Amino acid sequence: MKTFQQFGLTKVSLAVAIAMTLTACGGSGGGSSTPTSNTSVTTGETINKTTPNKTPTVAVVNQPTTPTPVNIDTATPNTPATNSTNTETQAFNLLNQQRQACGFGSLASHNELVKSAQNHNQYMAYVSEKSNIAQIYGSHYELLESSTAWKNTGLNNPYFSGEKVVNRVKTNATKQPLAQAVNYPYATSYQVGDMVYSISNGGFVTENIAFGSSGDSVELLKGLLAAPYHLKTLVSPIYKNVGIDYLETKAWQPTTNYAPITGHYLEVVLGLPQGQAPYTYNQVLTYPCNNVTGTEYKLTHEGPDPFNGHPSRPEISENSPIGQPVYILAPKGKTIQNISNVSIKPINGVTAPKVWVMFNKANPATDINQMVDGNKRLSDNEAFLIPDSPLAKATTYQVSYTLVYADKTQEAKTFSFSTKP
Image (cartoon, rainbow, N blue to C red; front, side, top):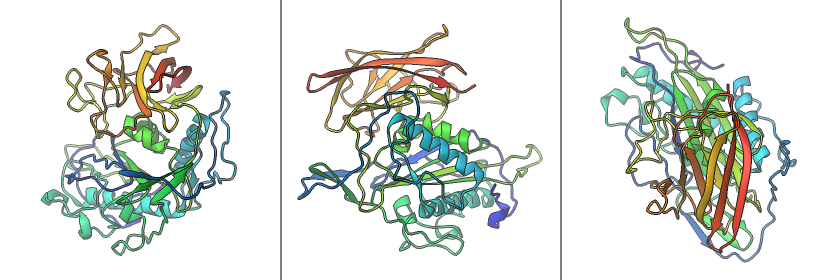
């Protein structure tokens, strides 16, 4: 287990401990907004489609039809990088098991992505330790903050390794002395069938961050898998490599008014290497999927918030939490026109939650439980079923829904998953 002291950090005051915060960053680095300190920012991918001259060889992934997890990518090693600690191995194994069981494809741990995750975790930890402010610092960006409270940001930080994740995974980015050199050859385009998908500014690499005053790597990962946009990124079949770093600070006492606290960081960097195509699939994939167990049951923060600006529901918070969402990914080329017959019901008689249904073609005027993705993170073949309130602990839920596609075809699905104790 790593501590701040192992990274040469000194013991200074931090006023209060905070609850877990989640931030997710897309691969293109093309977002137009400038982040502020401790603000969650997601940059979407601008994907251009062109017709290629030839068809590449791609891996084919089939969703298991039985509840037994299946290793659907035996050609990819399923062992973490040699410099991962045991706690990172646990998070790696959990993420891979969940992806494989639900048909999204396995991930191979990549040493360069591990080093990038380590660099950024150390960067954020250094800011928290060196800045006398009542927050644990977290951001996808390594920019010089305008606030004097965060004066140890940007090039002033000895762990600076690049402004955005697409910079931090390449050796040509400016790096400060304590940051490790990283060179991950991410793809800027890929080909599936007769289409080429490309990112005009950046590449297919992304990061998810969870941080707060408590939580081991598995707890933080389960929190990420319960946050809609993080969940979408973590199970995306686009990515084939991953680097995970977990950092737990040495306990310190901010002032005499507070008990000693620690900071906990989980950074997950995913990438698609050059020369490879994403996993392909030919049926609807979901997370959770049938017989997944031990999911989170309550989420109190997501950035960006899917309910931002919603006319009849406040944003996700301690006072207005949600339950474990269900992510739906239909095959490429499909457009989800409507979703009906939706329910997430416990099998033991606990009250079933209201469920929000989020997809691009949603029509709140005819179905008050439908909502359009105001953050524009979803493609036309993606959707979320979001429980309006926390789920019960250690409970099995049956999920049912019917997808109606723009081509008039329909698919009805029913499966079960269980929450953690």
